[in-house]
Length: 368
Ligand SMILES: *Cc1c(COP(=O)(O)O)cnc(C)c1O
Image (tube, rainbow, N blue to C red; front, top):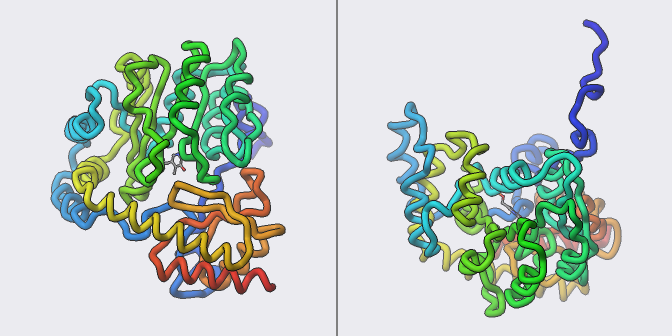
């Protein structure tokens, strides 16, 4: 074989991408450590799974998997339109909201453009930015959360897009609706503002508001949502964004024609209809957050107050050793050194007994 280095012909930006580090799968830990009874609190999944009605919906679909899915996602968009109070033409479906975040980068940014996001923000933003050859502009965080003034100050002629996760992952911090609205008013409308609401269904706070109901005010606003978190369908990959019809039309031009599969469409529709289950999941999470935070208090560990379904705890030193020790006890959590948080571990809320086990494993690991 002749010597050929594919890196010599790669597009600019690709070599600076650090591949996404997913939470360790349970099977991998079983294989590597020979352990059973492992719990995974590492990827912000719903610990009670999806609505029990979802399995039936998927079963009914199986007879038809020889057919292509509905590329327009008619039924799911109609249900979302009704649920959110927006026109179906404003919704773009994705293979997870990750897919939609990439559409946005690809449609609005290319070589030399700038995309702004905060320090400690979701890892997919730099990936999507670098993949289109754009430059990530990372603004400093304030008390672990977003400094919206720093974000608007970072806008230049080259800025195309701003990614804002509200609440943010992995910090669980959030921005109030009034301060976000003030920011949207002061920045130029040529800059697309993406508010990523992957965890919005968990939030009990009054001062938090989804921006879906502000889309009519800002033509440059896009709100993304997902079925991976509270709806418990992370394995099926379905998410969406809501925007003006004009933006949705642009996103549709680059979307793969069948980007959401038929089982995912059916499951998401059924999960959306079961809002009682969403309420139960929210309550389970609120209790789980209290349980974890009470445990951290008892261990005298600092944590970042979170309104997501996870909380990042400061283990008081390099978190990697604590992570590995917890792993050996069969508890998978998430190191977040890649987010410039080397002393924190992000722990997803689990069932009460899982939270207890995580706290036990954490306690044992601090003394090693
Ligand atoms: C988990 C997460 C998502 C959702 O990703 P999917 O591709 O929909 O599974 C989006 N944004 C943030 C901030 C997340 O943490």
